[in-house]
Image 1 (cartoon, rainbow, N blue to C red):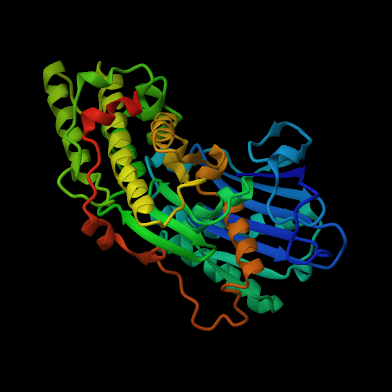
Image 2 (tube, helix red, strand yellow):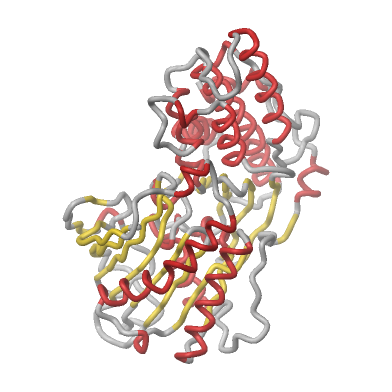
Length: 453
């Protein structure tokens, strides 16, 4: 775990809720947990500090960043002045100091997240991380204005640790509390890095989620479709595990999805073809479990052909990776294409300045992102993605969601009574049945295959 300090300046021509306001924002996240601490004393120059934990390459990293400038509404990357110490981040923040807690990722060693292990790591490190970060920032708990924490959805054991700690902090220091929906935070991150007005189409693709929605406001979403079983990132991780990619010399330190993407770059996707899921359903839902079973069966067949046992590396492993990645990309393209057509047909999104926002860990996959860029270009949509470090789970997005809600006066609680974490929680109003009733036909696979080429 690393703790770092970063600095950036934002556009002086933007505004915040109070022209004399000063933002002090702290965000803490460990694994599935993210806590944001917000402070707004009244000074002429706003300052934002964010303590955050991100899972980067499935290791655990924590950093503290400061954003200085005149009152702002949305940072303007074009006018941001960046000062680099040792690593400049894509979204206008860079580390200026760091502290290392641990460097070996239990997630990579175990081949995935084990809830009880994640819970133990949370409990063992959360107090130390908070104290180290507050010490590095030079700001006391008394100066905080509010605490915001991810309460849904996610791993129950991890959410429980974060909520228990933050509620204790809130009650001890008499601070307001802002509960955060994890997927809402992903969807709104783009408004931190780009000046984007509502409404816009959102595709969230990660290891735990896959959904299409329309963002109409800070807490106003229309759910068009979601995965009916597992998420694409989860599927790619399981395929990587079945291929024993941790034993591959090029992938031993990579997470599963990243290893698939790496090997696929030099693989031939045409050597294997997988039947795409849900072709008979004209909706925006996703399914990846059936595709995973097809891939598993193909791997078993290839192992028989090569005379090797499970756990050994196939000679055609790069081709398998390429074919799997391509199938996932095309399935995502087809459902997203239908969502675009539905939104335009029903005037949910204006044809002028129509925007597709893609976020979540799988959005960092450059092959899938290129396919989505081609799809967006072909349909006169702008494609916007947060920088890779903000696509994966991170505390910055929780901090930003807290700021958005604080500005809008949404969900700022002054009592902790009855607050619970929710491992499963829908995003917005579900209109997926309306999508299915419209029964919009999109081009067949062979007609859009070029999109991912």
